[in-house]
Amino acid sequence: MQTLTITTPDDWHCHFRDGDTLTESVRASARVFRRALAMPNLTPPITTAKRALEYREQILTARPAGSDFEPVVTLYLTDATKREDIQIAAKQGIKAAKLYPAGVTTNSDSAVNSIETLYPLFEEMAQQGMLLLIHGEVNDPDIDIFDRESVFIDRHLQPIVKAFPELKIVFEHVSTSEAVDFVNGASENVAATITPQHLLLNRNDLLVGGLKPHNYCLPILKRSSHQVALQKAITTGSKKFFLGTDSAPHEQNQKESACGCAGCYTAPVAIELYAQVFESLDALDKLEGFASHHGADFYGLPRNTDKITLAKKTWTVPEKIPLNGGKILIPFFAGQSLSWQLQE
Ligand code: DOR
Ligand code: ZN
Image (cartoon, rainbow, N blue to C red; front, side):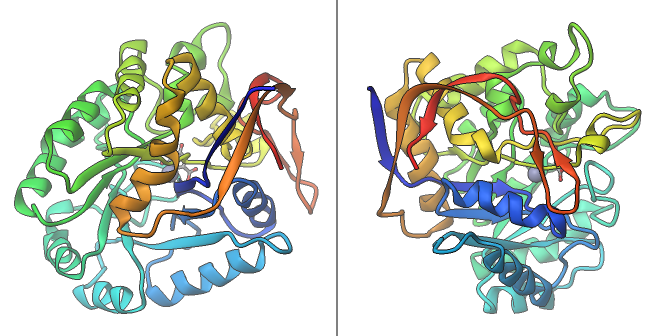
């Protein structure tokens, strides 16, 4: 059987949630990833270092027995975040803070209304060596949802990058050719995560032949030319692009709803799907850099030293994942057959 052994990967963008979902989401990530960056958009959001460190403990407690999985926690920026909050977080070892424009996605209502007023925080973050993680979409009602990422680049990202050349920025879950071009053209302090869904799917997979709520995420899937641009970005082997699943579990009834939540629960199938994409692009040799090296290098953290092995083997993704408490999650690619499987 064909196998592929790579350095144990990390996930630089993951939503674990809390409550009933946490044990399952941590299990799914700890299965394959050594580290995962835990996004702070809980209710209420994680706006202080104290809460971030408590959340870290919660995730550690939720790990399966014997797991050495390590969460990397972040701060959620709001209009009320102060320079001191950044200083305290940096002192406590928190590596990054997340910028959500208010209202742009799940649990972002209490986030940032005026990005420009955060400039003193960005200055502090640059001084502290803290990374700025950005959900790069505008939320103006008059901007078409398919254009919200490219407009964000022109209105906000260009000026931030220009004003703070020393600040390390991760443009999260890029979904457009404009974003790929921007990252490629920016300094080495600007990088991006790419999700499996944006590599594997385009908006036809969301909208043609019936609405597919489990393919609905934000940024929304774009037309196929953008998908191709993302695929091209990963096949170059550029260090600017790395793995971030944006694994975002929502209960089945909140996805299959008249007003469905955005988010794909990708963690249970993520490395397998990335392997499938890289193979389809004849670029399996680039998987390890993307999944296991580039992110750690950008964050200034040591690369993992252990390995995982994937086997070329057909298997079927479960239709559903029941949680303690009776709720149900539908994994991404539920019921579909995949061609690579982690050897556990
Ligand atoms: O699809 C998404 N789901 N995009 C986000 O930005 C947030 C995430 C979530 O928290 O559910
Ligand atoms: Zn996310």
